[in-house]
Amino acid sequence: MGSQRKKKEKKKDFVKPKLKVGKSKPKPTSHTELGFKAKAIDLPEQSITKAHTSRETFDHYVSLARHHSHTTRREALTYLQSHLPEDVDSSLFTSISPLILDPTPTVRAAVLSLVRAIPSSSLAPHVHLISLYIHAGMTHLAPEVRADSSKFMLLLLKAEESDIAMQLVTRSWEKSLHCFGSLLGWDLTTSPMSGSSTGPSAHTDSIKWNNVGNATSIDGIVNAAGHLEALSLFLRLGLSDNLTREMQAQSQLPVYHADTGKHLIPRNTTAPYARLGLFVEDKSGSLSTVWSTEDTSARYQLLKPMLSGMLSGLDSGRRRGGEIGRTCKHLIDFLEKAKLEAEKLQ
Image 1 (cartoon, rainbow, N blue to C red):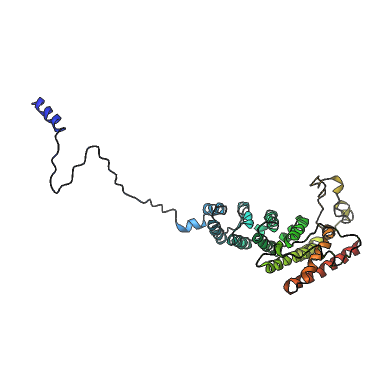
Image 2 (spheres, rainbow, N blue to C red):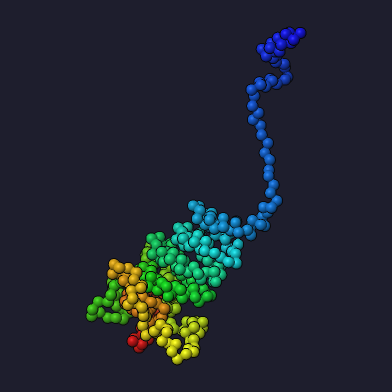
């Protein structure tokens, strides 16, 4: 009995199944099932409301500001502007400052709108970083980037907190003047020739007016007006003594002791510690000493070698008339007045 049952089981493995009409062919024993079912995972704690207000999502969009796609960069900047926290840390400025040089106009416009939305108290500690990229934009090879650089400069100069504008004036006075000269196509390094006139018409033939450094720019006149507005405000902040009420109050602090003046930095010199060689920046000879630009007289001394070239460029722009001509005329009058006041103090 047992042997017959074993024989039947062995024979069963070699029996060919008969196919029947209307029925599917039986699957072989080595068949693999390829069908699958999709299932969704529900996470109730990840709601849309929490995602928009979480710090992790904000940091994620900060990182997207460096994305290779200009559309993603623009959308990330728009999100950051609408979800700015109360305390803005340095990671945001580190990510968005290089976008001042972005080749896409919409991205630069989004950066400008975002910086304008940041509170002045959070913007003030990072003015130096932003100014580095503004100066790079003012000397950029792309005309479009140069054209938008003065917009960022005006944004800082017109900030509600006066410390922001004064940081540009005191920390980067000479650098900004050279960048304005490059932006407007002026040669500010050429010294006046001996025997030549020193008025606004001097060097008019050698220093030509140039719209944003590129005569082929379509909107060159509009951009030149914006650059001149930024230059005018920058010079007025740097060469005017009565800037704001806060600065006047700081300069008129009372002296409570008769010997207090002996322990203060002397006011009759612009660089009292220059003899110690503490501020040597470039040993090649081009910029051997970093001037102190904390007071108006020191800033004028740095402007003085560039004054001839600047007046020549402004005089050439004055002859064009219109808005540019009016701005140049007002700026020439201001520089002439500042020159006379500086000569009286000497």
